Image (cartoon, rainbow, N blue to C red; front, side):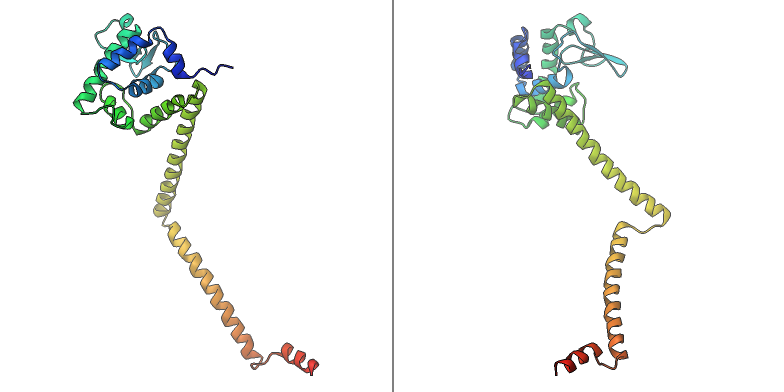
Amino acid sequence: MNTTTWLQELQQEPWFSSVASQFSAQGVPAALWEATLLDEDASLNPQIAVNDNGGISYGLFQLRQPGIGAGYNPSTLEDPVQNAKIAAAAMGSALQSAGVSSSTPLSQQLQVIEKAGWPGDLSEDAKRQSELASVQSGGTLLDKGMATLGAGAQLIGNTAASGAATLAGGTASALGLPSTQQINNWIVMGTVGAVLLGVLAGGFMLLASGGQNPAGDAALAAAA
């Protein structure tokens, strides 16, 4: 069984030191570029090329043409060190312009680089942080995948629940049906009404018997 963590696999790559130095030179925190790499190319394949919404994204940091990889030969983008150099320059410039440092929370750093060529949203940022936290704690790529699936399932569940509640409320309103709050109020009122009817029924029975309790009188007579 392979227990090598993703970070260990990364550090064992022959190009790791050169790639790390590119980001260090641009003031890009290790956690930021590692989280981005983990999300963009977890397989650590420098020659990967992916069709990307009308363009093609190349290499470790998936530099897109058109986009951040524009003007470069594909072979350059598939070189791990050159790919990292281009990515590091873009990230470093964006972080500096935003006044972000290594002490800034990773979530804010990720939001900044979205504008530098790694688009995403809050859910994507959360996924990248979750994945990195998993491998930093010694998780394997399988753990990373499970963390991603878990985050996705939770997001889908929350969205579905919210959507169902909104749909139900909207449908009830459109059909002129009562809201959930109104139904709850009616249940409470019905319960109170049932109790009051029980009390009234007991009172009527007592009046009908002339204020006497035959069963109780019989018991007293027998005791006497």
